Structures are given as structure tokens and as C-alpha cells.
Length: 496
Image 1 (cartoon, rainbow, N blue to C red):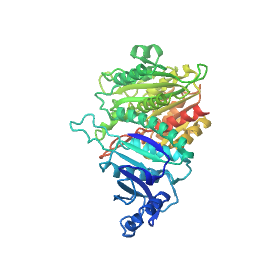
Image 2 (cartoon, rainbow, N blue to C red; image 1 turned 90 degrees about the vertical axis):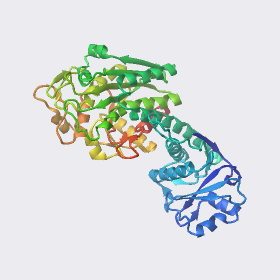
Image 3 (cartoon, one colour; image 1 turned 120 degrees about the vertical axis):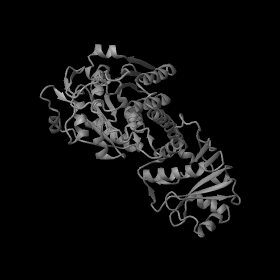
Image 4 (cartoon, rainbow, N blue to C red; image 1 turned 45 degrees about the vertical axis):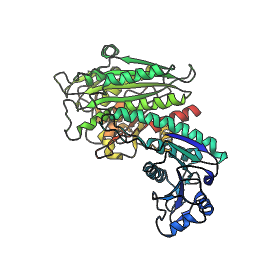
């Protein structure tokens, strides 16, 4: 869909549909009031009949109002609050988009610039609006014999003032890059595991490298992983016919002398749990266990679209966790690249095993900061549900930067502690560390495990087990999170 910006009077625009705001109690917004005046009170006359009260998300379509060039006027209720929250504003935009998609017009004009969104200036609210509109058309029907109907709506114009036009255009450019990254992430997540395996992800990375001159891609196979001493990484993939891969993407957008930021993504393309087999119900959703890696590729896609002036290294730790005669057993002890040994008490705690070796590998890039992204623990879903990503780390400044980026992007994270007391739960009588810490504080002890391999740099861990996809029902599928958070973090670093 095309988004454009104009700074003209709404009543002068010729369009299939003009969208304006009405507050609860039938209070006309500034633009709606002007249209009502030009049309001789046609809007207020309809409202007096009680067809729309202005409650949040309500819509009412009016046809052929006198003295207006718009064929239709869509009234959208904004509720009773003078300031809208992010969620309410997104719902309003989604309601308008759903109504527009049900019409036959190929274009629409949104005159919503007058709305106030709490804590957001013109750029911030415009980006929320643009992201909602652009992401709202996402469909994954690659494997359906009957494809989704092509929507008639092709172009939306956002009205604003001349003073605000540059901010709105910048917001749209950023939103377009972020939603492009989210789409890539969602597509990868939604692919079936018989197609999306470690070698497939490696090919996707290589395709990105071919299309971008400032992106170098390396794929480390089993032989190279063994040479590096990545015993934990190899242990996860040894039960599968699909070989593991460590995919390295190096983007040079900044000065050569600048240290890179490193994103590490968990890419378990299917997780049966291994010998510690998961229950069968809902196991199909374990294709989403690679959404950490997918979100890193999505973030890189956004960075490439914007050509951000930063250096960025993306490490994708990809493997398939299967039960077989070759699979790792509970009780096995493996050596990591760091030299530490790990007793594997549960083969379903495999994400931390591919990540620990990859985090050790990350140190060679002498990073400014390392962030790992992983669908790591069901415990994080229990703690935070599907609304916030779990955040842990060894550096408060980095944690604050990520929390701030999440708020600005409306892709929020919530910080959990990494107190020393939790580390004791990982004690093993036979190895340096156990790969699980018992039933209590499972998300935190997983973070504690990873922290043992990140002492050489600033590090943060994002547990996206609750936010990376929606379970069950008609809305089931990958969400594209936390691409907005990560892209905002890198936008902030570029601006700094």
C-alpha cells in the first residue's frame, strides 16, 4: 500500500473516502466540524439521529455529502478521552482500515492529524498510524490453493499541516522499513518446518547478501562449529537429519573504526524437545522457535532499507531439535566454546545451548553491545503473558536504552532481575553448570545461564516466547515482534 502526505484542506480533496474523527457524545473534531459547515450541517444531522455516538472504534459511512469532493465520508469514533493511549489510537486506526477495506474505493484520505496521543509528538503518533496501516494488510496464504482477495485500497493520504509535513514523511519512511522487516519476520515464522530449516535460513541470508553490497554473509557448517569447540551448539542438532548452521551477517553502515552492535537470534527451526519430548498438543507451534533468528533478519531488513549509519553483526544460531538414536540424552555433559562444561538435565532447554556458544563467538567482533533474542522459556509467558518481552542483562544503561526504545516503538519490554542468588539454582555436581535451574524463576535462571557467557561485553537478553507469535484460533501466526523495538534501538544509536 502507498502512503503519501499532503497539507491541504480536507474539503477540497477528491477521494473515494475521507476519514474524520468524532468524539464520544457526538463531538465533532476540527476537520469534521469544518466538513459539517461546508456540507450545510449534513454530518450533525446524521449524528442527531443516533447512528453513531463517537465511542472508540465506532465507524459510520456517509455517502455523497453536499459541497464535498469526497465520494464518501467515514466517521470514526475516538471515545471520550481528550488524549488517546497508544493502544486506543492503534485500535482506532485498525477500525478505520477495516472499514476502508470493505469498500470498493482504491484510495482514501485520513484527516486524523488533530488527534492527541499521550506522550507522542507528530512523528511518534504518525509512525504508530503508518505502522498500523501498513502491517494491517498482512496475509500469509502461500500454501492456500485459493488466495485472499486482492484489496481495492491501494493508496492512503495522511493530511497534516505544512509545519508538520517533514515529520510525518520521516515517520512514514521509518514505518515502511519497520513493517517490511516485520513482514519478512512473520513470513519466516509462519513457514512450515519442512521448508524452513537451518539451511533454508542460510539461503535467505545469502540472498540478502547478494542484494546488498555493504552486507557480508558467512555460513558456518558442522565442521567449522566443531573446529571452534561449539560442543553445546552441536549437541542440539545432532539428533536431526537437518544439519545445524551458524549464520553470520556483517553490515557496514558506519565508519570502519566504529565497533559494531551484535544481534544474536535463536533459530531452532523446530523444537520437539528432543528426548525430553514435549506434549503433542500444540507442538506444531514449535516451528516458531526460530522467531528470534527471524526477528534479527527482519531488523536487518529494516536497517538495510534505511541504510542506517551503524555497523551491525547478526548471528543466527540455527538447529533443529529432534529425538533419535543420535540425540543428546538427559545427563550428557558437553563442552562449550568458552571452555565451560554443561550438564544437560533437560534436552528441551536447548535454546540456551546454541546461544551460549554463539554469545562466546560474538566477543570476537569487539562489540559495543550484544543483544540476544530468543523464544526461550514458557516461564516468561507465565510471568508476562503476550504483551511484554522479558528483558535481562548485565548493563543497566543498555537495559534502559532497550526499555526506552520499546516504549517509543510501542513494542514494550519489562526488566527482570539477574540476582546472584538465582545463579545458585544452576549448580551441577558433575559439570560447571546445569542447563536448567528447577521449576522456580525459569525465565530468570535461563538468563542467568546465558550471563555466564557474556562477561566480556555489555549484554542484554530478550525473551520473546510470549510476544513472537499468537497461539491458536483464526489469528494464529507470527507477530513480527520485536522488530520495532530493535529497529528503534538502532535508530536511537544512529542518532546518538
